[in-house]
Image (tube, rainbow, N blue to C red; front, side, top):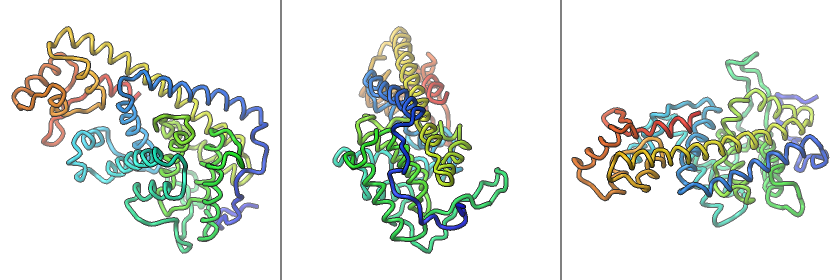
Amino acid sequence: MFDRTKPYNDLPLLPPKIDIESNVNILKKLVSSSRALATVNGNLNRLPNPLMLVNTLSLQEAKTSTEIENIFTTEDELYKAISDTKRNEHSNPATKEVLKYREALWAGYRTLQDNRVINKQLILQIFNQIKETTSGYRPPQANIVIKRGQSELRPGEIVYTPPRNEQVIELLMNNLIDFLNDDLKYSFDPLLKMCIAHYQFEAIHPFQDGNGRTGRILNLLYLVSKGLLSQPILYISKYIILNKDDYYFKLSAVTQRNSWEGWIIYMLDAVEKTSMITNEKINDILSQMEETNNYAKGKIKWYNKEINEVIFSQPYIKPRVIGQIIKKTSRTTLTKYMNELVENRILRPKKIGSEVYYLNDDLLRIIEE
């Protein structure tokens, strides 16, 4: 019997000792999820500036990923922080956690541009940026256990104890990294590898804290490293938080009963549903951009394509961003221009503290649906 209260130092090495690639149910789901994921890259190319959607969705991914760890912030706090980077240091702790997640995601993405593999250095880089530390894998004396949450049945009960031995953790992590990168020795489809590796990473639980967030970033970066995503844009955390009970149940089923099929199908479904949602958002944003551009050009003489793109680059915007486009720096002139955008209901002013931000309600509606 599996003892949840004892360190799982016998966690098997990868690959799993079952025939995953011949499982009909898994293969059917792999086909549909791969097809859905492939459409995301094609659709991204339709955007005039793909980074605008990447920035916005990565912020939503960061927010939801931290909510899985019971770290909550508001949209106002988030958008205020990214609209005025000089004020980031005054953000509340939850907002800072979200911003650190997004920064870790982008830093990892930039590292991948030079080195197309997932290695120990990259994993440590992500973790260290999320937690603002310089530490490595957790030390053997760290008494880490996974317990039920206070809102669950039997709160505080131990549900899993990860490996607790420095050499064992190092061995398991080296095996995981090798599994991800060696496609000759481990010739699984990359999407299957991501599903398998995500379970293994969470089961190893290599760090004292931040494992969930680190693991979810690794999912995206691995797909980028294999060319399945050109940008780390997939908003998987929303699917997980909407199906959180299933997520933890199926994780436990692999540990306790070697039940890989349910877990892999769950993760592939997350990729498929998230890809479909992402494509819908891209289509909705492009349609709304066109409507706004046509409407605004008929109302405002100075409105142009560049202005339209910048107000869809993020939901909250400050006047100086508009000023950089139209090359106007006078506060009086900028106020006049912003008032025109407000009068024509293209943007909406909102005072947060002593600052006034301008909201693109159409973009907010799309990304928050």
